[in-house]
Image (cartoon, rainbow, N blue to C red; front, side):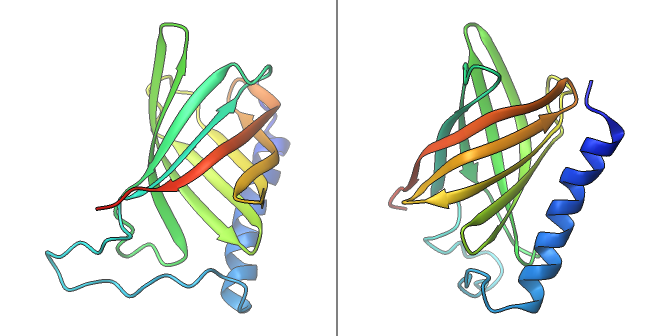
Length: 149
């Protein structure tokens, strides 16, 4: 099981990222929110695919969801697969320059996680994840794609 100290430290990294990004100009600029009822082309189209776990045995897909009212945080819906197991969850992601922090919550496996990593050449490399069942585990994003609306 993840220690309280480890969980706190990873959560603190996410909070520190939010504070740091809010006080600098390194935050990625997000297009303005459209009028109520309209959905811009950039919303709901970003998709991350990758692997996680002690042996990178879990494959995942994270799809961007509505970000209205979240400020610098981005909401994604996630789904991970390993053999015949499927786990679904919500994610909140913060990007600051090349740094990424994510919180996985409401997991159907009751195993919530905190991720950190760096975007290098359009991929997450050297990522670390701590979950309720342990860690640190590696994770990586092998592709970040934008589907046409």
